[in-house]
Amino acid sequence: MHASTRASGWADPLRGLHWLVLALWALSALAGPWLPLAPDRIDLTRILDAPGAGAWLGTDDLGRSVLDRLLVGARTSFVVALGVVLISALLGTLIGAAAGAAGGWTDLVIVRIIDVFLAFPGILLAIALAGLLGPGLGNVVIALAAVGWVGYARLARAQVLSLRGRDHVLAARALGVGGPRILFRHLLPLALAPLLVEATFGVAAIVIAEAGLSFLGLGVQPPAASWGSMIRDGVAYMLVAPHLVLAPGLALMLVVLAVNLAGDRLRDRLDVRTG
Amino acid sequence: MDHPLAARLGSALVVVLGVCTLVFVLLHLVPGDPVDAMLGESARPADRTALRTALGLDRPLMEQYGRYLAGLARLDLGASFQDQRPVTAILAERLPATLILAAAALLLALLLAIPLGVLAARHRGGPIDGAAMGFSLLGIAMPNFWLGPLLILVFSLWLGWTPVSGFEGPASLVLPAVTLGTALAAILARMVRASVLEVLGEDYIRTARAKGLTEFAVLRRHALRNAWLPVLTLVGLQLGGLLGGAVITETVFAWPGIGSLLVEAIQSRDYPVVQGCVLLISVLYVLVNTLTDLAYARIDPRIRLG
Image 1 (cartoon, one colour):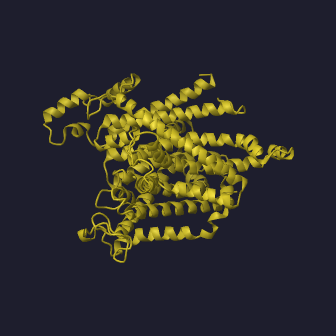
Image 2 (tube, chains in turn yellow, orange):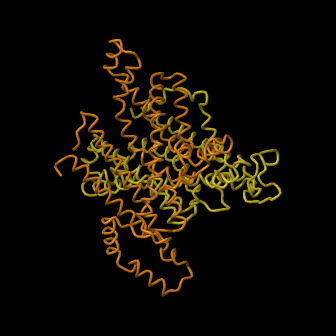
Image 3 (tube, one colour):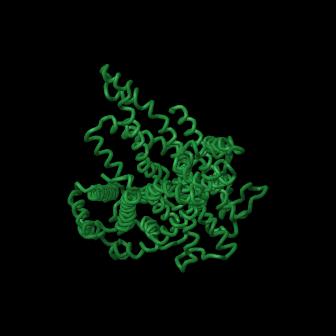
């Protein structure tokens, strides 16, 4: 399936464009604090201005610059995506790999727990958790990571199980190498490629999830900006100022598209190497 | 438990029990007191204690858990903090709207994804393939809380073809179903394409072509019928995403289903209703996946459960 999706060459003229989007995303997120942005400056003389010379992407219902808020929103989604993917990938890999390596009762219990988490539609659990924890960036990260670790755990466990019988692992065990050392030195390095691909697609999923929570009012709180909350606020003015909904949605879609394309490329490349 | 069907149902039951336990644990681990939510921060301590006792919150955790499970067994999910009505009654009121929406979205997704995927596989590498997979990439990247407002803008506000929101007649179903179904159609189209491509390489396809069947008959009778199985599994798995996505889609369109109920309950800190919504959606999801597994075994004689 993976090789075949690559075969359709429609994206070829756009090859490389997704790197540009990703670079812009990362740059606006990392450089944001040093840019002369005024995302919260209210200017009641320019409420709902259309995009123009004064403000490239127009202004919102409080006269704030949409472009500035978009750049600050980029930072929100970048920080949340990176934080959640790092935490859930590390946690999930550790739990899953430990289960696969330990076997027996430990494995059985962890597999059952994974099954239960998988029985929830992921975003549902995140919405409920974020709602109960209360709004805020930290709670968004906690809610999404609490749901996100499961996928990595399942993958890491499957990888460890399939690698456990390899010759070099048996040799290491025969030489008396201890369990944790086998796990970290002999099993996990080989399991890294598929986990990396999963994490890349995970970034796209978290970007959408964070925006979704913010859209529901469960994410960052005003005046802080998130693409999701910008869409939510913009919906009320859609007929007079469609740019309020179009701009953050387009940014969101481009980033998700770019991350997914990067993930496709990465998967193709790593699949080739792992044969 | 020696019958495979019983074993499958048994493991589904274990998962459902786990789901109920996890929901209980989450509600009790999370900071924030339901008594505060009901009475407000400024309530008198005596009132708090009284309510706490009335709700059984002063009991040991294990006893509360026991009562909770016993309640679930009687299908008693408690009463809403807002209007004291039983949660099950509220859920029963809201469930049909969600089921209608999910069914419409699923139907739409299948109607879009199967022709798209088959055509893309048949014309692999060509412009049709490119267009279909381009649609697929866009559909996956377009969150429903953006697609929904865009559709409202174009079809309700500009063209005036459909109601903006709410639940009035078949016309109001169109936009929510498109919003919810598009992402699923995008994922399924990819899967159908890959699955058909795999099947098209088989010997029996060559045989079917060699005996002079039309291309349509080859695709429909031989390719699609065999490519259908992995797609069916994915449909079952994606239904979770559909039910989860319904939460946001229902909020966008003010659709009176379980999803918008959940968001309302979260905003008013109505814990019993939140718990009921999460339980209902998750149990539905487990049920659908179990049924998918069973259907799978019925459709494909090569597969036996157990």
